[in-house]
Amino acid sequence: MGQSLDFEFIHENKCKRAVLLFHGMTGSPFEMKKMGRALYDADFDVFCYCLPGHGTSPINIKTVRWEDWYSDSTMHYKELTQKYDEVFLGGLCMGAVLALTIASEFKEVKGIISLSTTLFLDGWTIPWYNFFMPLGLYTILRYYYSFPEREPYGLKNEVLRKKIAALQKRNTEALDNYPMSCIYELLKLSRFAQKNMHKVVSPVLLMHAKEDDLTSTKGSIFVYENISSDLKKYIELENSYHLVVMDNERDFVFNTSIDFLNSLSSYAQISQKNICVRNEDSLNAN
Image 1 (cartoon, one colour):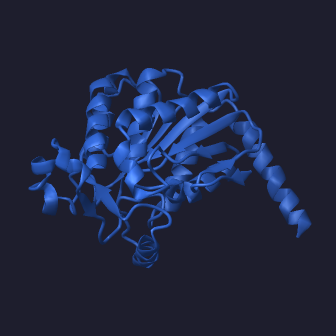
Image 2: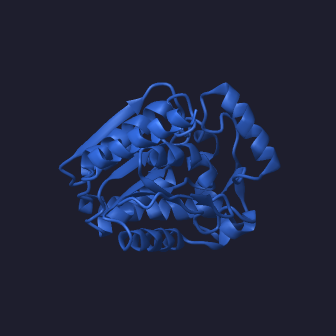
C-alpha cells in the first residue's frame, strides 16, 4: 500500500481483483480516497490516478483534450488486466463517464460503479452562466475564460463544505474553477459516450443524488435506459449533492458499492475470510 505524487493512490494487497477509480472534472484522487480505502478494506486492490491536466498547474488542464483523458484511463485499465483476474471500474462525475466509455470498448470489464454521472451540466447551480456558454464554448474564447466554483461545492454536509472551501482557498487538492475549455472537452466526451452507450454490457450500479448541484439525474437515467447490460441498478440518494463519496450518504455509497462488486466477484467468499482473519489479528494485537 502506498501513495504517489499528485494525490494518486494505490492500495495493493496482491489479491486477484482490482478496482480502478476515476475522479471528477477539475478534481483529483483526493476526492476518491475514502472510497478507495473502503474498497481496500473489503479486500479489493484499488488504484486511482490523476487524469491528464489535473493535480498540477491550472494552465495544464487547458491544454488537454478528452481523448487524452480517455487514452490515459484506458492505458491504466489495460495494465491492470495483465495483473488481475477481475478488474472493476468506478468513477465520479466525469470519471463515471470515462468508466462507462471504457466499458463500451472493453466488454470484459467485470462491473462498474457510476456515481453522479455527468453527461449533462444541468444541475441547480449551473443556469446562472448557461446564457454565456454558447458565446465562447465553440470559439477560441474557451481558452481564456473560467467559471468559478462556488457554494455548495458539491456538498450538502455543511461541516465538510467549510473544510472544502478552505482547501479551495489553498488550491492544493483541486482547481477552484471550471475552465470553459475543460467544459468543452467534457461535453465532447459526453457525446462520444452517449453515442456508444448501447455497447456497454458489463453490470452497472448507478447512484445519483436527487439534488445534485452540478448535473441532474438525467445523465444517470440516460445510462440506465441505454446500456445493454443484463444487470443494472439505479439508486437515487436523498441527502447528498454532487460529491456523493464525501457527503452525508458516503457510507451507504461505499457499502452498496462493495455489496454490488462482491455479488459479481468469484473471490467474494475468499475475501470475506481474509477480512475476518485481518479483524481477528487486529483484535489479538490489542
